[in-house]
Amino acid sequence: MLQIKKREKRELPLAPLERLLKRCGAKRVSENGVKEFASVLFEYAYSLSAEAVALAEHSGRKTIMESDIRMAKRKERV
Amino acid sequence: MLQIKKREKRELPLAPLERLLKRCGAKRVSENGVKEFASVLFEYAYSLSAEAVALAEHSGRKTIMESDIRMAKRKERV
Image (tube, rainbow over all chains, first blue to last red; front, side):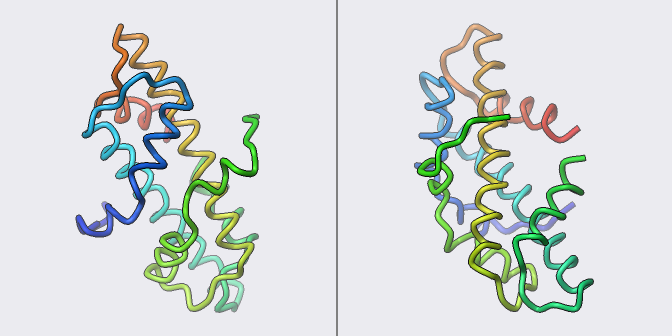
């Protein structure tokens, strides 16, 4: 399990996430609902990010490219 | 496949995402790398969100609760 600090979890701003939920048809969203949404997204982002960094290193690069993200996604979603 | 407009994709701000990649060990990140990262996250967020809305409706609620997000995540990640 990833160790995620509280401060880090809040790096994804809540307002756009609540808007997204509403655009998907939510009439109302509880405060904890939005926070949990942010937390789940952050966890996914963190895991995707770590995989992309490993893939770039594996290719002998120091720069994360679009292809690293795509390859990382492939692993994450399967 | 989800129909996502360009404007919507940009709702997740790029700066915190680039910071996250760097915290995971990235030395540099290409511009398209960050954009792809945002796009992948948005796709996941959209899908999670739609599932949470369906779950709340299924329970006869108009408010998205923390438990809807958790249940949606369960489906998404398996």
